[in-house]
Length: 265
Image (cartoon, rainbow, N blue to C red; front, side):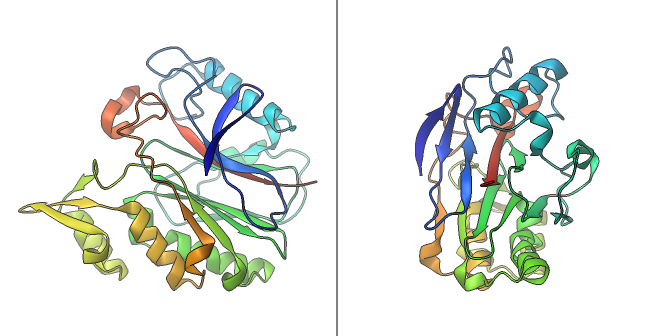
């Protein structure tokens, strides 16, 4: 992964071997139209930023990659495990903005699918053989419930994807250094069957530092992806205020960056 720029958009670019995608990556907070404290490329529709600014930013992102804003699909995220599947062309994709879900799978070209994040892990999945892509919003709840594993299973059941031939990228998120959690989170992970000691470090009684990257990497390998097909970012959004939004750092004054991916036409 490396920082790249296209048009006005600065983003962390991902390269998948044999990728059928025209683009995939993770936005930074730069080169948008939003004013402080949401400066400047805030892509989150559920923030207190002015709606016109967010729409302008989403239009900038879509146009930078050659599509209209209506082809930028982000579901209404609720920290659940519902997965939106788009398996046929739509004249108007905007109605998907009101559909609840925390992951999207599609085989449709020229549609940017994305998830908005401010601490949670954005995950991209790509099936080069069947030309299927997915994007996942993995906070601690989605991770504990194995959302990325369910998304891999959905790619297989809906489109015949072989997990052993998939590629994945886990983007910038809050890293272990800044992510202190408590007992309810530990219980959630144990209920979901994730080895707590493999992704959390005890900080003080009843407090742990959680590694979302490690937890989702474990889920991806358990789902059948080869370890060398999983790319991960070392960038902590909470530490790097000059590059990324972070809700834990900025609370209600935080914007949202996006993990996004699009198949070639």
